[in-house]
View 1: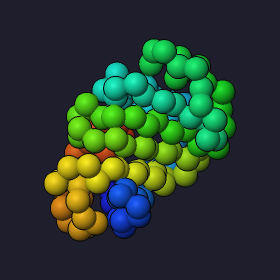
View 2: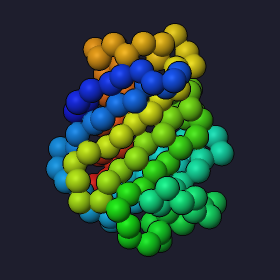
View 3: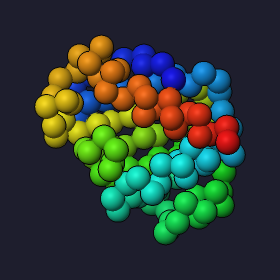
Amino acid sequence: MHLIGVKEDNAWLISRWELTYRVGWDTIVKGVASVFEFYLQPEVLVNGKPMQVSAKEDILKLPENSNLCIRGMSKIVKVPIMITFYNQLAAVDVNVAQATDEFKGADYERFNHSLCRYMDSIELAMYR
């Protein structure tokens, strides 16, 4: 995954990432399901509407729509994060709380270093 840009907005870092390929719904749900267990009290949204999800298997059954989002406190990056995938697009929006020194500013290189492996792992999980 490639970081396109990052900016600060109201104590959040707002970023856009580009997937290697455009992806469909089946691929997106696999990616979100792969990280579900690594969030504290995760919330999954389809087109901005919260879904009843208690296990990652529930995510794989969500009805196809235009976007899928997972948000909550990440156990891996240790800050609140929201990742939104778009059906049939290569774009991914990621919002990260500026809650630690690692995420204090919108420095492209530093932000990319902090999240690139995490985002690449999600993309790889989409194809398992």
